[in-house]
Length: 305
Image (cartoon, rainbow, N blue to C red; front, top):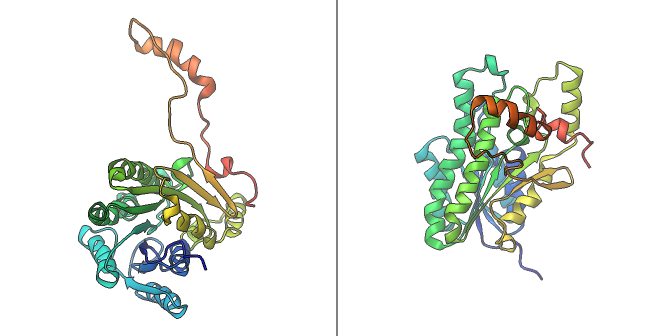
């Protein structure tokens, strides 16, 4: 009988009470992990709290013979994030992986977005990822090993309407993840990103007032959250110990590897540039390689497979 992929590993999953996080927590437990199910239990916009989502996932795991503990702390606060990690240590004696999945949405067209809309989304996604990861990093360094799986989005990697806050947070997570991979690599700590395509209660807040919006949502509804879990579990496993600093995507039964920004064109002048020379020589030379203003749906235009 083969040993489960995550046998005796302790995995913290934030935002694990519903959707993608729930699926990852349950699959991690089914592959031998001891799981901290963290969920504030807030509404889609991040407001409020409710212990039931985390408790229900813990019950599902333990009823199936697994081991799990609930955490209701918010990821947005430094001390609370440390409490999440301490829950793993208190219940299971160690921590081996963090899946940064907690999220919220406050969509608004840019000229109508409020400071609160922006700050709330940055706090949960970007600062929350930093807070929990930083809390775990001390232990990963001490034990010379650990793994971060961070949720990004094609809203940041490619673009989308009405999501300046979300896109900024999610692309910020890519930079954060790469930095964690670089800084922590000497301690055998890995960090990767997943851009998930999946129907969730957060996606359910997308407006459907136009036919285009309705078609977009209908396409997303085909992609269930459980499709994301296999890649996350694979990345946490020791079999992926050489995989770090990468950006993956999951879209139903499709898995993607995203490229990362690198120079594509080059211009040089020995005399130095003036604004006039840039306009005269550089822009025309580069123009054929300019990227169009695309949204995620423009790039992923085919039906999910």
